[in-house]
Length: 304
Image (cartoon, rainbow, N blue to C red; front, top):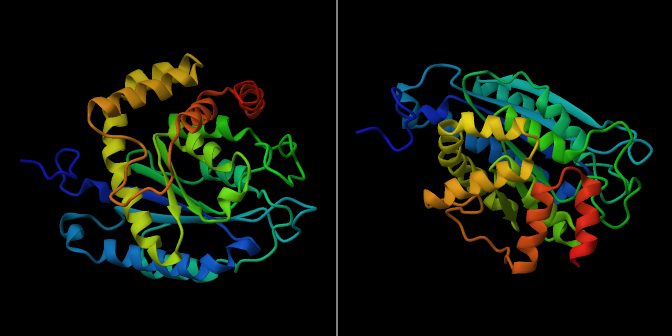
């Protein structure tokens, strides 16, 4: 019998993965950033030093980082910075130490979309599980949140819903860890992130305490494995739906498959604090199926 985490011939094949952390490094993240770094260190050490790697090969698990702040004039330090995929634990620790501290940021929304665009240009391997974990307490520009310097999106930066569909085509599962209570103070933010991650069959995890970061990330990674198996199994059909330029069909197909298998994209081993009223479900559906931010916002106004 195959191990439950096996894709076929190799047990613990989930370790053959590229794991990208996309980290908000703005000033509002100060209560979290040190614990986030510490937790990522602990997670990598636990995975790479566990019994699970007895049958794994060197380099099976690679870890990369993208840090982001905001666009000028809201922030003049940097928009995004990247630390490419490495597998050696010492180099992972070094890259974490080299991440800038939490500072700057300007208005409420941040350069989330620029970071997602950067994620698509990373040196992902072709034949492995691809998982991106976004950690932030703020929405991207252009989704209708209050205090946004760029209410229609930053000029020259792609639409984040398009980027999520590109991630789906590139077989990258995007998860979002919401630093609370800050995120829920932004209008549209939570519903947007649930819709965004749903496009790639990812999940949203509420983070109320930085000390549980390890549980959040490990839980989302394990959930991703089950979902990724499903995506791989039905890859041809999903590719055809993506090619049809009907993103709502992709979303509906994925969720129908997960219901059949007894899985949901919002399911974790930990309790999810976010209540999903019918009204909220409708809004998440709009974000996940909309062709663009402008389309989503127009439909949301009608549905209110």
